[in-house]
Image 1: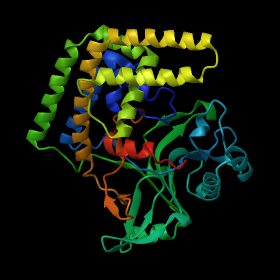
Image 2 (image 1 turned 90 degrees about the vertical axis):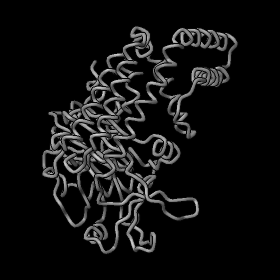
Image 3 (image 1 turned 180 degrees about the vertical axis):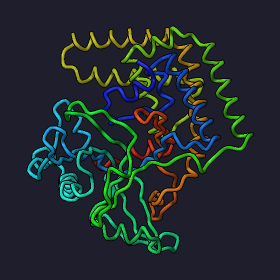
Image 4 (image 1 turned 30 degrees about the vertical axis):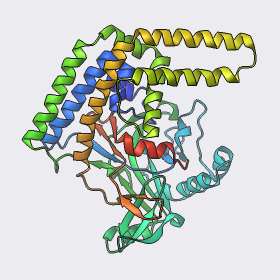
Length: 402
């Protein structure tokens, strides 16, 4: 399975991997393709490319998929549970009550989507995006002395100045949805996802603020010095990668349990605010595994099962220690990939967004922030996620509305 095939494995774009994690999923080949992807992005920014699809991630909730069933032409809405083995599909308010009645807030938004989106999404289209606001979510506030209209769908607060043309559009809308993915297929269970979404798939109505996230790289670029520095860093990363034990890297990635635990450990570090790897990282990973196994052991009721799980833990950590040297180098390698990614994110942040993002502070004030992140695709059908994990992943771990 190739790097891009992994990203779009099931054709249903419910989750994108962080580009620096691919080595733990796809092994040596994935690491090579990660460097190729980074180099291509850097070159495309330098060339002011208009073909690469760049989507500015928005921090909406819930994730919403909606459109017209290819099987019977009925309109439906759903959340990510649309992609469950037993999908939750809502054609009516009664379906919403049945599938999502446990959450009053979510149910209300889905019913609003059922009411207003049939006039927005053109016949035959199925698209996915982020629910941004209902009327009751809009607030008139002042930020730095400027009168603005705000809405906070999840973690980020978005603000629109009252003297901007967009203000009138949003204040008059019943709901707001921003779209990022389109689907095609003859049946609902065989849909293929693509980032090649177009504004032509949606209609503008006064009841719905609706747009896509697509933009291009034609308005940003590097200085020659910046480009040279980044490409040199990638050259060193490639050289270091070739010096690693290729077989061990592939063994780590092919061990699905170990691969998942490593990525879970990285996420735990992000959650704690620690985004840098150090010389004690293997010890930290082993301590993390001990704690994880101990929690599992404590839940078991019989001594036999506890003993079995204890042996599993010992063997698992023994295998990990056999990979310790390569893992040590990989953690450092991943950290350096992250640094290149952050340079790219900083450059992409020069792309403007209609809504200004803020983070609400503990004292109630607002601090302007950067967009949540970006999805980049050069084929339209696959992509990679670029997020400043030290900032937004940590926030989102601790604050999710749906």
